[in-house]
Image (cartoon, rainbow, N blue to C red):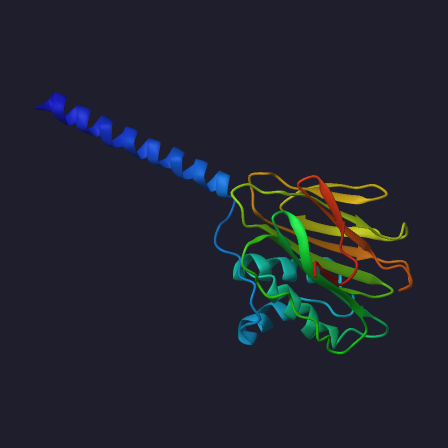
Amino acid sequence: MKGISRELVVGIFVGIAIGVVLSYALAVHDGTSGDIRTCPIVNHGILTGYLVRTSPTTGGEATARAAERAYLEQRSPNYPLELFREMYRDVPGRKEFLGLSYIFSNDALSYGQFTLTNETPSEFEFASPAPGMSQRIDGAGIITPKWAVIFVSLYDFKGMNGVEELRLTVPGEWKLEYYGGTGDILTGTVLRVRFSSMKRDNYVVLAFETDGSLDHPPQIEVVIDGDSYRLLRDYSST
């Protein structure tokens, strides 16, 4: 009887161990902690909780962290988008609102849009989901003569992540103040963030001290399955 009990206990612990290993393997392969939602519905009561953490006068790390926390907790890039749209009204002086949204099908750019505007508030919205999407890139930010904060989410709907890298070219006078994200950052003439093939939902948030002008906006590029795409303009495959 004792031998049977011991074997049963050992079997239970072996089963638990196998289950833990399999669960971890699936989690690593999938690279997600919940579905990313891209929809225009944002709870403004929840948004206010993040808005009070921003700094419209100095931007910087506090604002970048607020956008990052909103994205991670709400699992939607729409929260950073609306966060920047709301705080834009309170940013003093000259400023520009940055927005981008691109849809890929079969690993190739299908359509998208880019805006850099001084509208108050900006009418920019993320592109609507499309059947057969393979990847989508969404982002928003604010640029002023003194500071800039930029957020970008990069999502792959396939089994493995094909979004390899984000490249950001900024004026040489800009100084990186904060980086948050899921990739490995490489600084240089071109700031590069490289992503693992095992994680399908990635994001980048950056805060900069800028050079005192709005004459040289950042250049944004992504690499998907070896092909690079410059996200600077409206695009349609039709």
